[in-house]
Length: 77
Image (cartoon, rainbow, N blue to C red; front, side, top):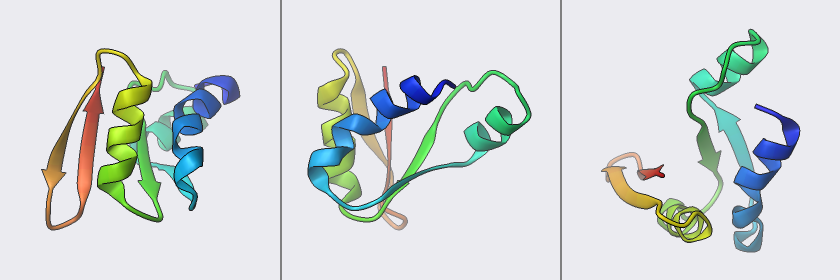
């Protein structure tokens, strides 16, 4: 994933403040020079608000809660 693509992914989160980190298999794949199929983002803050913001920033995207215990959400599209 290019730096520009990563910046475009994270840009909608800027108004929410706090920190965001790319985590998971996407990091591994990028480091190994493999194609990055998906991106996991960990945030310091309200995960539901971040998921809503990312979905709004990507027309046609949907969001749904993966785990209420861990506060994780998925955005597709």
